[in-house]
Length: 202
Image (cartoon, rainbow, N blue to C red; front, side, top):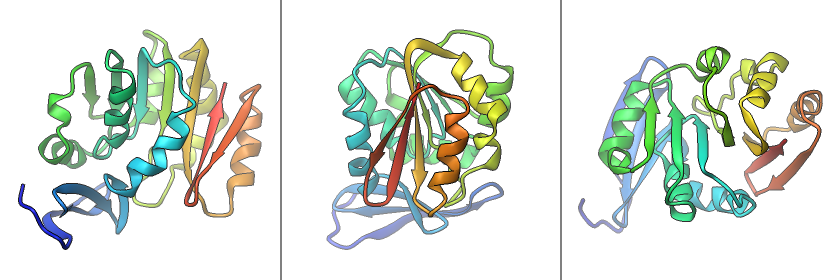
């Protein structure tokens, strides 16, 4: 890693799933951009710090949407012994996460290269006390992840005291999402940031 006062592109590619993917380096730190939207590193760390402060237990963690793994790193800082399973549909993103963001060295992290929605549908093993839903493809959140069938399945693999945290990039349709979540969860809390809205569901 070199030291630069200006951001510079260190890797660029296109994938069939995410389209244009760019890794940039600035002041010896990497950021991951997908379709010109920053998904890991930089400001993303600040955005996630606020909702994660509300988490007080994370032994078994499921992350839907890995990106460069900023959330993985934040969880490990607070809960070093946490076992994390992360689903990422794009193999190219996984390779980038390991090469530039150190994900290959994170203890207790299992990365699975699969469609999270299909994986959840068939999952019947251990339950999780924290599930993070962050499945953006560029700036698009998959519609199937808002359907009642998917939300109910998430609820079934959550421990009794567990929480589901859904990351939503603000786009004026938050009310519609809240209505869908209300049908599946008894309690919903919101954590607001300038660009993102986090729904805590349990």
